Amino acid sequence: MRIGELARRTNVSERSLRYYEKQGMLSAERTPGGHREYPEAAVDRVIRIQELFAAGLCSEKIVQLLPCMRDADGGPSVRATPSLVANLTAERARIDRMIADLVRSRDTLDEVIDAARLP
Amino acid sequence: MRIGELARRTNVSERSLRYYEKQGMLSAERTPGGHREYPEAAVDRVIRIQELFAAGLCSEKIVQLLPCMRDADGGPSVRATPSLVANLTAERARIDRMIADLVRSRDTLDEVIDAARLP
DNA sequence: CTTGATTCTGACATGCGTGTCAGGTTCTAG
DNA sequence: CTAGAACCTGACACGCATGTCAGAATCAAG
Image (cartoon, rainbow over all chains, first blue to last red; front, side, top):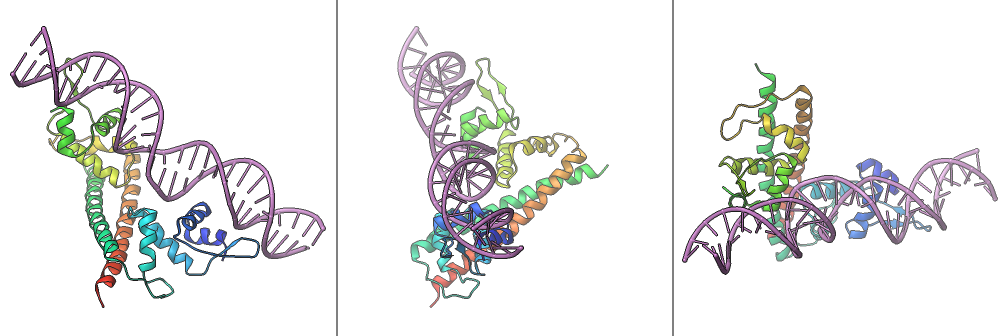
């Protein structure tokens, strides 16, 4: 599929898709004229990338991480190096803290919302 | 307490504390010479502000939200307006989605970390 | 062919909380 | 009184994914 369709299906702008490619997170074949041609699996990959961004990982980390993931097309994975594992473990801890923070904030909102509804 | 101590105790830079004040999220008495003097409750408030920032709320929303919260000093709260409640409800939904995303990303990391440890 | 939609590259702009620096004033211990 | 620490204001810079615009080339359908 081409970039317009991928953008529509993933809800990610064409701008961002080109950026992902430049960062090395997403690759595409090219038509003779130079237009990008994506495989079906690109949809899942882009969604994963978005999730990882939302989790606070930067492009660089994601670039390292992606080849180690079991891809949607079931492709065989690269083994993560020990240093990458250490890195990801730290990120994991960060994500845990982030989730805990979010839960607290959600509770805060609930309190205010509920207080407004009652007497 | 003064700004240096508050910064140390909350692990938030003096720069940010002054910014919070300018945005109307944090107030302080002033010494005759113009130095900020914070009450003990400021510590909790700053931590809350940080959590809400981490949850993706912008200053403006937090400004509206803060007076409706049951503060650490147990002060009485302002009632949230219906439009604010609608707003916060939307934020709450966003936070829920964010948590779900984070959990997925954490699972992704776990998969890669585990795969590197085994055979 | 022609035309309109789509895509291409490259460059500049934005948000927004935060870092940092400069030049000056206030506070506090000796 | 004095020195040094702490604080004041204001201004400029950054990160970094994303928005946006311009000008040109490609693609697909009539």
